[in-house]
Image (cartoon, rainbow, N blue to C red; front, side):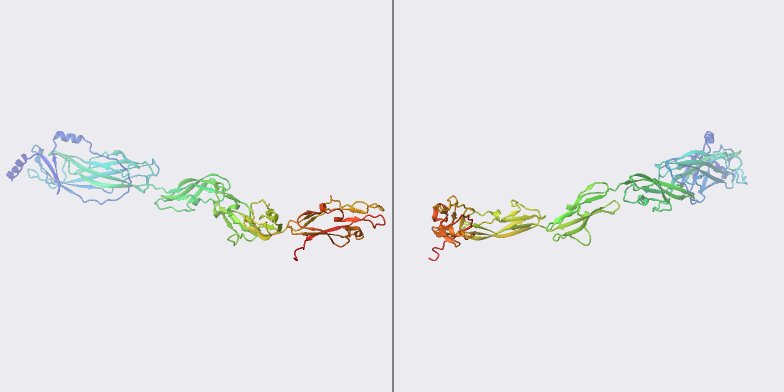
Length: 620
């Protein structure tokens, strides 16, 4: 028995004083420390917390699945210099880690305003139990207890790394780490605790209901035992790690959006039209709700142009408390300058109706002048057109819609008058050889309004008519008055005839005086009293005379000693034009003979001169 043990011990002298930690897949080698190294380790802090802060997030108490307890098998080979030559047969380390650790804070959520902060802590702890199997000493003695007397120095080293999910919107950092005063766990256990104080600060507005903060916890253990029999230090046992994401509730705020509006004095103000949209605290779309949405601000007077400030307030409930969110907008009221001007119009029959003739001007709601548009005008009643062929009055309308889509219009009239265009002419007779004067056949003309039209007007046309006056004939001539809307014709005839025989005698002839009882009883025609026969056609003529009144006087009127009397007598005859009074003198013409007069007398009488075509040669 002793030889066998001695052999084992001797073999152990040849081995390096190393300690091995092993499990099924990993073997970690750790060198046994000398006394100086042991002292350095003892002087080190018993607890170490390393934090890495790069992002922000949220914390909720999610309970992770707890992994099964893990046993670490370890074997120890001793240097013979260690007092007591104690041999521990495969001690075990069972660790426990509470994975339900949460982010502790007195505030429920992180505020929604930029600069809001949330402070809390994470309380981390790890406990490991050293489970020694029954140990056999060199001298055959056994420890009757699993507890090894002596002073334990043990520690669990933590490394707690935080990683924020969105560092652009949140700042997450560890502001302090606390360790408990009593860092030594009970006998036969090792462990440590650390309280990490964390501060989260909002850097900008965000959309979301929680902030995620991913973390990673890693740890490793060290164990030191010193008693009267042995002094032993083990470090760098196999490390462990655990990932956890804390979810921090964020206060959410509804959003509402409004828009400015411009209204005109003819319109009505409705705040609903300024509401654009929004979301509630659960990010559901908001609809207009008069129960939760109220409008305040200036009283909007649609009769007074100006800017009116308005505020839409949305009331909601968060964590049992009423809260509000607002959105401001401006309602600008302008005068509606929509207007149209038109006039009554008058037309004449045959004219073409045009709405534009009655249009004066139009302006839109902003006062901008608008050109004429056919949509601005329409005919009233059931009529669809204006009857331009029948005199009468028709109602027409001019209008356009204002800012409120109501019609601003004017009622005008269209009057159709009778076209009074006219032309009157007359027939005429001219003599062969005379000139035809076209104006002589024009009587009168009027325009559509009944106003006189002069012959010289270009609206009167003779249509190129011609008359040949070199010979007798009848010509049918048409004149035309070309009015604005209609033309009027007038037809007449021009007769060209031979010029008739004409006689020219003085109106009054004074034969002079006779002295009764004297020898000169005859009173002759004075040649100054010209008698002219005109025979342009040279067809021949016959001149006769008779006394028409004072038949008693006729007893004294003679021609070539022939009593003229009351019967017609031929005085002269001829062909062509002739001045009879120049050729017929004294008894050859007519004269007065008072030879038979017995008393004083004064005579007045009317002579009727006649000239007729000569009938000589007709029978021949």
